[in-house]
Image: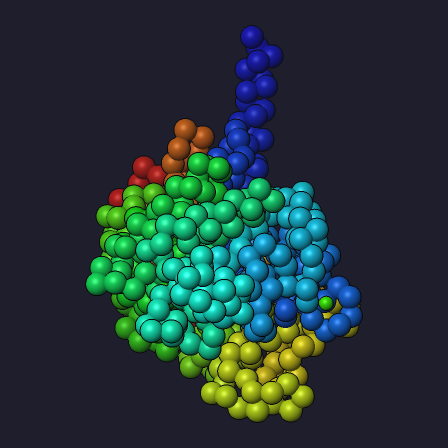
Length: 506
Ligand SMILES: [Ca+2]
Ligand SMILES: [Ca+2]
């Protein structure tokens, strides 16, 4: 008995010491195996990421060869932008849903990528581009050739002209035809059987054009998601509803596991970047989360600071001049402490720049629009460097991965550190609890995150200094998980708080 008491005292002392060293919160089980929809995502434009065979074009084997890059950064899941054959450089107009763009590799390469990623604890989701096909897809070629084609009703006709939401030869599929839904379910099954974790539904609000489009689309996505869940209950479906108002996308939680949080993104751009109405930051987000919770209590949001359809964060007004690096770092720390599964667009961790051009000619390439929002990742070494797009000098002043990895103060290392803090603290990683800090003002914007299940209960307070002056907070009695009580300009402090005393902080 005495021996057992000694052991217990030792364990208590030992765990106390561990806590002082900011070790991960101790849990009897690996929570990531329970909450499989919570990940830290990395969005990859395959053409620009890593070239394995020297043709200058990124490919699947290049990703496989660089999975350790993702592991070292802390990434646990990847969103691959379209990888099916397509006549366009971006791939958002598919000609064959069952094979791989030859520039990117083969189905065998994709299987190998999935398997190698799984071996490192990384899941893969795919872009599911189903609002439209390419007008070069065999379905459409047949459909256009004859009103008697079995594929005629796969599309939406006005006379002999097929409806296009986006133009450019992207012809909309007809989701009033059950055969089209079956085709999509078959495509999903094909890739789920290969081991993908789920899908990102492209252009979700355009799938069905009707007077009741939001509900019609949400219910269509629900049908697809239920099909997927019957096959894999842990799978993940995130819908792209490109709107800056949460009121416009909240109802898509009817069928989606997750939605990109463009409202939070816009608040980050506006409050952190431009400094507008900073005192509203946390309260705005609370309003959004409360609205989402009314549709789906266990919503898993997908916070972002940008994606391939937007000018890169480092090129945005407010982020491209004074305190640029500090603001980019704060945007990252906010994005990675919000509820859900945060997404990082490749190159954001380096502060890469890039904007849209309205059809200018680039020597050696041709006419460009969104290409420079999706430019080659900056490895800093020739190995794996992609070069399909001529360098326009926009990133001349941006340090490469090789340089940033060696610099402990780099943006890359800010990302790496805050991702680790998120993954070590269940209050940040799981659940969607979010309440604004009681003493928020126009400089300090904080929020409490909390998580509790049968394995662990934890609460943390995240304080962001959205100002160019250092701010000192009087919380010295709390355990610091990240940062310093003297919060530098655009800095972040994360402290552990007693879950029973949350009421003192909100
Ligand atoms: Ca290649
Ligand atoms: Ca449509």
